[in-house]
Image (cartoon, rainbow, N blue to C red; front, top):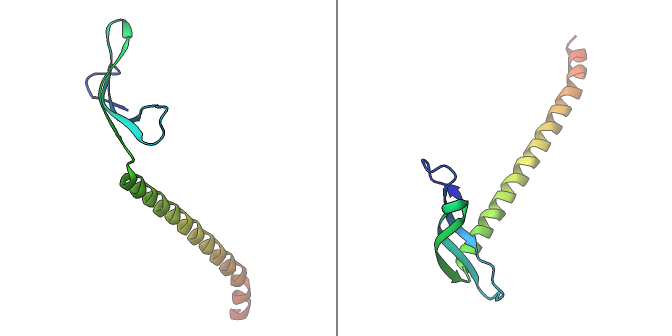
Length: 100
């Protein structure tokens, strides 16, 4: 959920909010507005959509896999750069001795 500028914390937009059900065959989500009514009572106006969302879940899974690969690649690159820096640091005194 996120708020709407100008309404403070009184109105929030609901996107893909999970609706709990006893039937796990389909995922149910709602889209709409949540706002504080009289006496700060929470009220919700929304539309509910149900489905398996297979394509959406597959796309999100692929994004997660790509991000995990990017993080692993970055970590490996940092490790290689650190190892290279260590080798250069250890070799520098030997080179200075040969030049002198």
